[in-house]
Image (tube, rainbow, N blue to C red; front, top):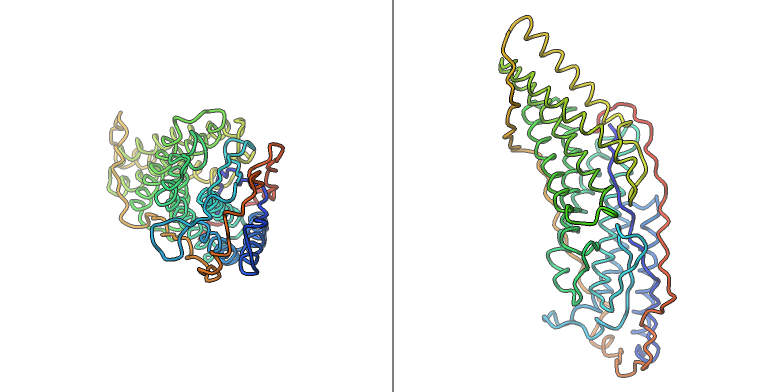
Length: 411
């Protein structure tokens, strides 16, 4: 069935010409600058191109990143940085804080910011694919893999590159560790939603489905907690999404746990578990309404109208009614006042990020090419510094509306 995922907007960036008149001498250095300019422009175009697929994105991003590495790493693979690391100023907006850009004269800042957008692209690609009618098994696998790739990129940026920044990220900015962690965990949780849908379709044991749903709810709770100290003005909508998904999958867990209890002839406990599922489903329904009314980055939709949401409501209602009938005819068991403790651990289906590494430095970077950049020739009124009037235009993203859901499970 179609899934619905909250998405923050792409980061926007100021154009970069890579023109170093007087500094870049000779055809090899000029070619590097020209290729940096064209590969960056191509990559930015692909972020909003609906025909772009993961193979195209990987090829385009590898082309740019391998060239950019020459501005960051020394060619002899020592720990020494490139002499060109601080030659260019880069400006990027943030996914949450509107069109107010951050600027750093540091190629590492560019590497991280562009890598962040590549990860966001994978999440948006997965979201578009997951919202299709009659999604195929192969497409579902691609959704699953794309979310794991995105999680891997966010994780790699957080652990391996953010610490290299000379200027630390400001509170609430994309490159702050808390935000990156929230993105990692959200990607893992959404990939597990695909796993759960697959397990339901293949009629796996209710105990496994309950455990996966419980672990997924915990992921959403963790992501929400990570964002708890951010300003509500720009984090409220995202947090509503995380909270409602936490409630939704807690309801799923109690619903399938109830089925497991009924199969073990614990009908009274099963009824209590289903009542708890009803309670969390009602919470999720209220949060859906609040999400739609909350201003902030992200789409304006009514998640409670999606079939994936309505389907669980019917399942909880029908399963509870079944348990109550069975108890009235067969078991006559007392219904506990306390809800059962969900101490469920999934042994299968848990999602881990796909390990990510940036490509190595392009072969076009040679000692002679690097030597052709003479920093002593830089003009004193450095034109690479940002102009005050320079405006970073927001990214015009294609408006993707959820397609009509046929009710088929994602497979």
